[in-house]
Image (cartoon, rainbow, N blue to C red; front, side, top):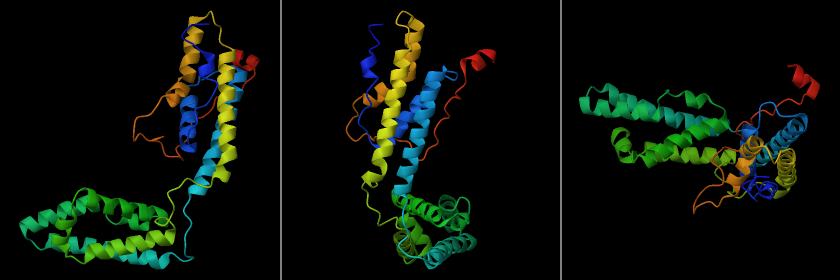
Length: 261
């Protein structure tokens, strides 16, 4: 076999978080051939099924749990305060003062590019949109400008309603630690085993005298090498959301069927 192709470096999975292991499974599925032989196709199907199970367990344990039974009062307060803020900006815009109107229009475009439609979203999604706008005020240093337009009482009241809404949703009080280890440990082990099984299957069918076959195998398994590389200080394990869609696995077809197509 090619001296640059060491099968051993592909047949163990780096110890990573569930999110990074899911990311590795996505990369392997994306790099897989579209029409592999039946043994490899079956391993890819098994890999994807294991990834789906881990993904479902991870998302389920990460889901915030509301701390109150009825979220409507919190939702109504937040809705009213966002509406009050926008109404105040609209008033500034309609005053007719050229400078003040222009500033109010820019602020409305920044904070309400699609109006108030985010207030009709499901509870958690509405909170996320509210959070995004409040973070924008902070990151773009808009607080002084905003308070100069609408007054000093609006933003603190809005933040108070937003924080109360988040606590009621179980979001702002959620611990930053990883979800319950017991809930994801077995699916994580199963996915790692499926990745190793797939890698061993690819390595096992490589013709060591066929340079093209060796290159194809290296391409299929290269995500494992990437996952093994050291990360720099502060680098995140994975930039993909845990619930990002998984690429489809190829269909498992009999060799006779594949030849006939």
